[in-house]
Image (cartoon, rainbow, N blue to C red; front, side, top):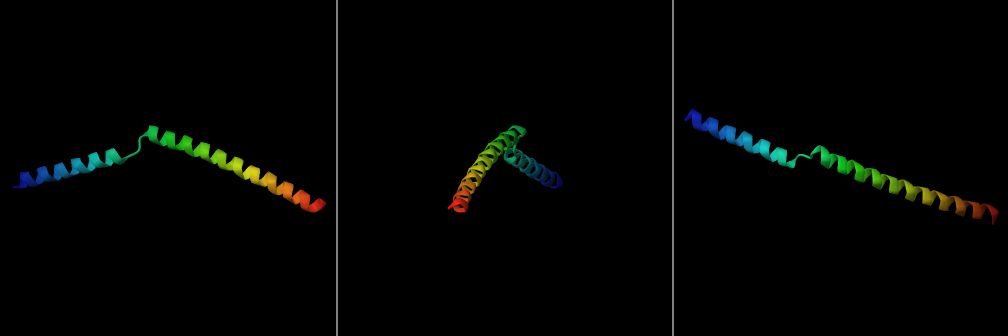
Length: 65
């Protein structure tokens, strides 16, 4: 009876570890995500710069109007 419980426990632990391994990100996954975030952050910086330039232009027109 004790051996049966041990086998069930070992099976449960093995299944849990296998599930965790399947759900974990790999180094390659993380690298791709970092690259994607970097590209998106650069695009956002560009958008912010465009807004800044437009606001400066609006401000300049208001000052000289």
